[in-house]
Amino acid sequence: MDKPMNRWKRIYRKLFRQKDRIGEYEALLKRALENGYRVMSLLEWVREDYPSGHVLLLRHDVDIDSRGAERMFEVERRLGVHASYYFRHLTMKSSLVKRMLREGFEVGLHYETLALKMRYLQLKDKKEISSEILLSCQQQLAGEIQEFRKSFGSMTSLCSHGAAWNRKLGVPNHILVDDTFKKEHDILFEAYDEALRERITTYISDASVTDASVWRYGKSPVEAIEQGDSVILLLTHPEHWNHHFLSNVRKLWLSFLDR
Image: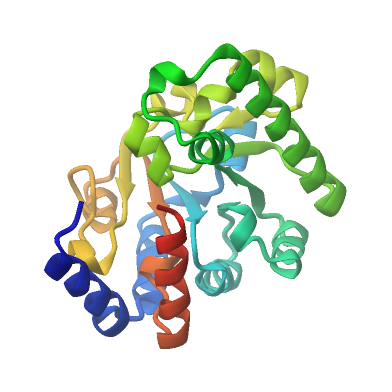
């Protein structure tokens, strides 16, 4: 738990130290293209049977910032590349999702079904997660998939959201999506499937300004590109790239609601 002073420092950095990094993101993609990388969505990569050799996979987890997602989408669209976007229900902007799908982008649910159930039941230990709870969550998730398809017509993959309650109990949402579930609901893959991860050479994730905007898991995407890594997965969260004061206030509020 953050001490009060640390909490206020984080809030200050979020509101006043966050820089707009959309230009940096565009430069990164241009660097990849100039170095001969194929920039692809996860869906394109899977459908082409996991090509290797200078591939940059773009995945965006839209946790709290749909405005930032739209700005990143516009960069990709201008450069003629596609990405995978996973939206939580609270960040899903209907008009944006429809535009992305029309442009050939991949869009899916950044689902948190189990986390919400654990929070609702105020579970204290993962041993309290019964088979009945898991079945109930799978049925709920199936309904969420159906509603998404009813609204937008297409969804091929899912990506688990790492909510506060997942971290508290040490249980990820993606335990709901086993092979049987995927087959029954026409899900081609879950973004955390081992079959995907074992084919990725370099996994890179961004971090927030409160963590000095560092790159997680060993190297930056520019380093990976310059070193010629075969298959790079770049996971980004739009809130770490988009600076807008009022938007940052809203993002802080949504972060608070997650707890």
